[in-house]
Length: 526
Image (cartoon, rainbow, N blue to C red; front, side):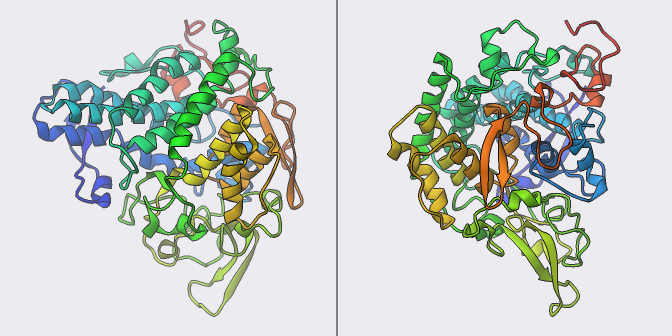
């Protein structure tokens, strides 16, 4: 298969986004001059911008696909396909909800693999070569981290593909992918990428620390820890999942938690929490509490696609589409305490705006919609949004640190410091005697619709239960029935379906337990 490499310049953040294809490029291309080192590396960033892309239908955007399965999202817009999630009708053929995620993340893997193949041939100083390799390996690890959390066992590709037939292969154990790619890639990157903060979306040590801490926290839980009990079993295809105790009481779990703590302690105190306005202000891109962000621009073709889906459906408050498809369910919003600053008008949510044609006309709507993605310049014009998407920000680090300290049974002051900084910004009283319910609740409220809850559910195998002005309890994932779903979760729902396109194109790949379509060609994927 011929590979296309996109070269970019880096004179500014917007230039960093401006991908200009020069020609079709194979791994045999002659790119040995030093000037090619930077563009080859930037190629590995290309697919990050697809995070807020679409899934074939109006208002059906990819961030929806990571919120709908949790039970905390709702939309009445039929194009978004929420009804399939709430009635247990999800398959790998559901529009491009899964096809696009698979192709986007694997395209990112392929871009990183191509960079890693070609960079050693470029005439670069040793330290510069190591830095570029570290960036590419960190990004490859991040793409694979997304892949294995979504689908479990996955196709493992660590070299550029030259033809499509090379991609036809069975799945590799998720544990092997963590052990042989994700963790080594990030550990290598930590020692060679630039120190400190990232001010332009490029990978630095702080970015690697955030991702790697998340990886360590994840493999201290599920599904890694269950696979580790018997790596030879076909966990994903047979749906054998049953463990639900958290934290996991194993030597490897504790070791991973201690590694995560080192990284999180290094990040602690190096950032500060600003205001909630910072979250939707493009002027704060890569500043404040931002650690790792997808770089967007208001220029055509490089926009953050989440702004319009976050607006109330067809209310005439914007010159652009108002999809009303990226909306926390009303019971999610109602679980915030009444005095929580995050639900006060135009903090993280809003319930009114002005008519785009008549600013004296106030438009009110219910339920409340997300204000954290309200880029006013984009909402009130026909321009796209240059608001960055945050994969990691400091509040997430503080809450991960709380969870790690809690799981390691550290002192109360160590456990409480992170979560109480988050609560202080929200105007809430500090907690003492922090529990797992407190941690998962605070993550739900602070990181609402940042595509974190699905991963939290799967790695802890716990779900929050929404109450009026509170999260009333947590329940085991298996057996939990979300308030607006007509079924209870089973072991099937700990993974997502392999996409229909991949089932057709890869004749040996096998489907996850309980999902359609199933493989009709090949044998057992061996």
